[in-house]
Length: 150
Image 1 (cartoon, rainbow, N blue to C red):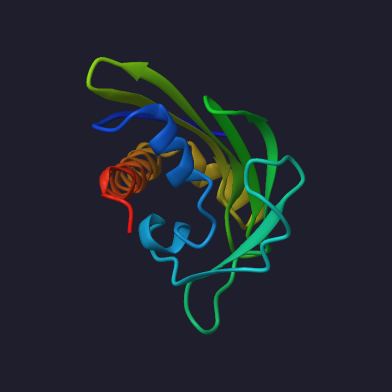
Image 2: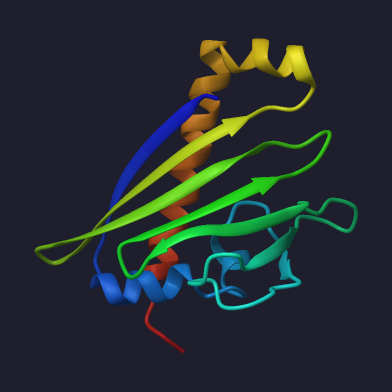
């Protein structure tokens, strides 16, 4: 599976960034294209918790599952969007720094369509697009985490 790592800095303490990350309904405010978060089975800082993302009336991710948590510094989720969607794992790592929090997002992903998807995964333009999309996701999350509560 291809792997992308992107980093950012959030002008907020790690506790604030962590709280933003485990805010289930808030995911729809920063996750690109997500309109809603559905069927949250428990707290997002608990391994085994599952949820689904709604992208439009017809497209919904299969299941996103929290698979590993080391509060408040590491959170890993796994997803599988089915036959025509991506699958993979994403780990968010938080590290306190002067004036805020350093955030790393590590993502391993697979494309759909079997051999064609695996062939596309090796193409430079696809890897660049994935890295760009992950940067956008992280930037949107950071802006969400920096917003004042309320």
